[in-house]
Image (tube, rainbow, N blue to C red; front, side, top):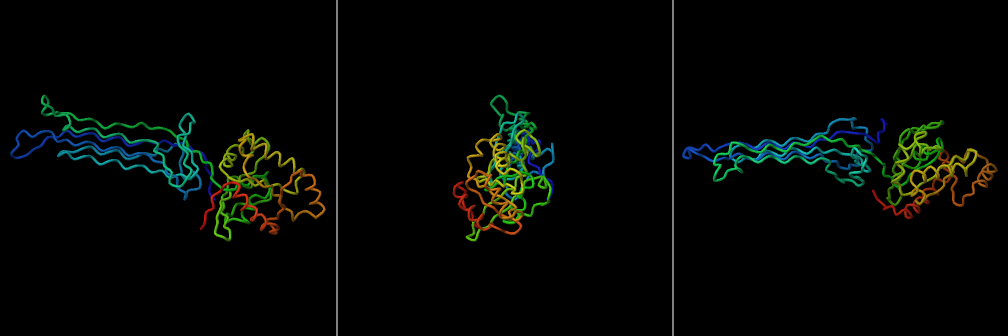
Length: 334
């Protein structure tokens, strides 16, 4: 997988309007033909469109100018100039467009959502519009309206049905690879996942849901520590949260509280989402060790799994369908 980019600043400029024409009829039997200068064409717009074929913003170049085409000038015989071609800029669903002050101009959540970030300039009127009883042969026309370049920031917040949240090396990537079509990088050390991964779960009845593996959260993430705020933002849109806790850790209850505290400090609404506690790596503990760990957990609803052996993965998938209903996630089918 290439680099993941979820925030970038670019420049956009709509097309200038074409100038109106100064022209006069030249006909054989009309020695004093009147004005016939046509209007200039409208400049093209810059339009952002949500396109699900795109996953992140890495195909953009920082500070690049995305410019629509200028309108064409008018011509004689009252011929209008052509309108400039719009500049269509595809972005992943979930992209917010912000102005230079950081205010949100648009939030393109659904496929084909659009936002016109810069409107093309109007074309100027040709001299045919300025003929009057006192001005029979106007020697002037309007210029087209020029458009200024503006800067916008694109800020992506992934859209997924299910978000996997856990400390580094809690088994999020392994679980994602086990139950979805994603193939994230997996390693036995912290911060293997340096960017969010998306996968699709397909159930036997044809229902499909998207799952996001959010890079490991540590204490102080809401202040920018570790991978910090840059990836906490991707939790905001998920409908259901799975908290993954490594059973080989020292204090399961503390680790759960840490995760929930970081999420609530970033956005307290996140704790109101339907959630489920998943205890990972159960294959690494004996039955006695497992009982002792769970006794200290102080949590009523949980499920012990092993992504390596497949233990309880079937029960997890059944529980996910129930959580989807609680999260009011619309079922999609293939």
